[in-house]
Length: 94
Image 1 (tube, rainbow, N blue to C red):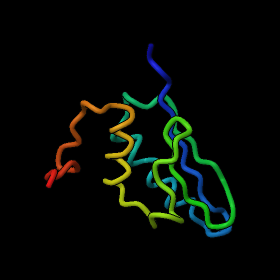
Image 2: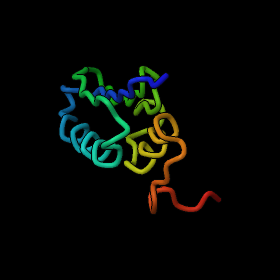
Image 3: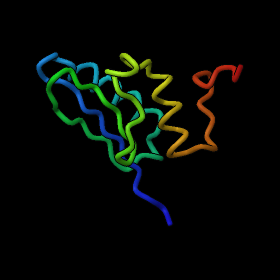
Image 4: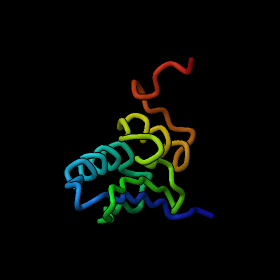
């Protein structure tokens, strides 16, 4: 059974974080153009910046700060295409 692979980026409209969310969305869509079925941007408030894969929170700015794209790409890859190499974004394991 193949599940639909969804990513959601929830961002704070009060903080004007739409450009940051859109940039991260573009990075993910470019990297996972065949693995993702859907990527959505969800407006929020109160300083929120959360990335979810299939409703699982993989990054929360309140706990982890703003993500580097390579860190989010690794987390998304681990959930939607674990066998896939990210090339230079993978970097050394140690």
